[in-house]
Length: 252
Ligand SMILES: Nc1ncnc2c1ncn2[C@@H]1O[C@H](COP(=O)(O)OP(=O)(O)OP(=O)(O)O)[C@@H](O)[C@H]1O
Ligand SMILES: [Mg+2]
Image (cartoon, rainbow, N blue to C red; front, side, top):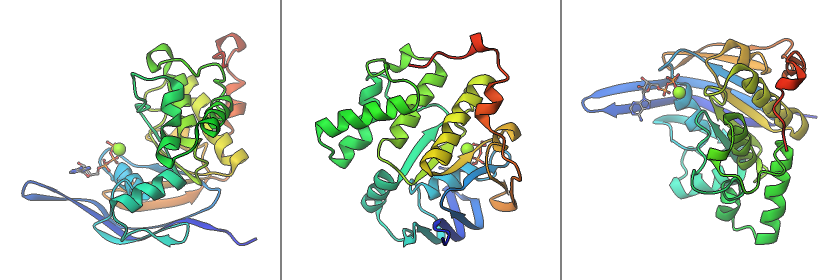
């Protein structure tokens, strides 16, 4: 079967104007990601990782260059069209979880479905299914401040997957978590990739985290300086077995 190209970037440039100065955050990036890959984007602070991820996620538009998402040219779309594409195809996970603090897990997870106009019954089913999937089946009515960081990130992942996206983008998803919780979150993200076949692009500072991916891209000063497959990606589920049983977070 031919590989399906999910992301194709051609000579992407991004310039930010700050007062009189121009900041070149992306200086001509070419990148192709095929369906089912799990890609890590690494690089020092300011190298352009978030800029690139935001362009891939249709949250921001390049100054120059072409972007094809699932074969469709999205570089020329306006804000409303980009929002529609995001809602349909892309799930986002962030370092700070980005949950609404004043509403329950359920209300957070159903937001993308509300935007998509899903009816109530289907919405309830899909929210429950997403929560089950991240191992938090009984957490529908919990508020973010009643959950641990790892649990909040699982709710954020449930929100990201509730619309059945073909692509999940994560910007430092373990940046705010301790090492064991980070591996737990990586095991959820690996399952998204392996069991659901969702293409994943994840920005991380941490070498350990990048080794759970199938490919590592290094950015420097807005350019790709290396792009290499990981010969034997680590299994986060396996690595978790090394932690004592009583330390495991009780899910559900
Ligand atoms: N909205 C913006 N306005 C102006 N400059 C910006 C903006 N966003 C990013 N930049 C600049 O673009 C460059 C790349 O920033 P970016 O946030 O993509 O880096 P990063 O690799 O994600 O860094 P970090 O690891 O610190 O998150 C930096 O020089 C940054 O200051
Ligand atoms: Mg960043």
